[in-house]
Length: 227
Image (cartoon, rainbow, N blue to C red):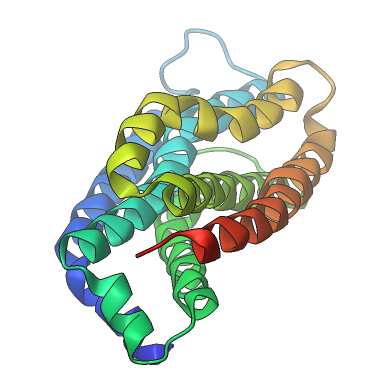
């Protein structure tokens, strides 16, 4: 497994650096645009400041949730171009082990890309309490894991060449569906203190529930593929 993971990060080191740089840039933009008090003629309330800051962080959450899924597709693409999968199977590595390496790649990349998102949450000029931080963090990982699980499922079923076209078409919706949950308490007055509930639902449904479903579905399809 360690060798498979080293192969993944060696093949995609440049792509990952580019993705990480873009997320860091968007994080800095979110921090610079988060000061709503200085750009408004009237003094905003704490709820208005928090609402604006959360909406400012959503593009960062979208990108950081979208990229782990794209890294998975790139991984499958590298393997297919190099005919890596039939080779590694021929030396005794199980298909389930190969699939687990893609899942771990998705998890590790999500954790690394979470760091700029965390910096953005802390650096934005807002008055977040523990409920908001928990809600945003759970939503981030729910989005990232959902994006990765969809990519793993489509690549396992169809291969990377078809998956690139399909996921590129639906990628916006894949990342926006879980993120849309956080918009509800962020935009409706009086619901800001319930943001952690929506984040928990996002994480349990999209990050855990769909991940388990897509994992076993991907494993069944991946085992049936003739490499």
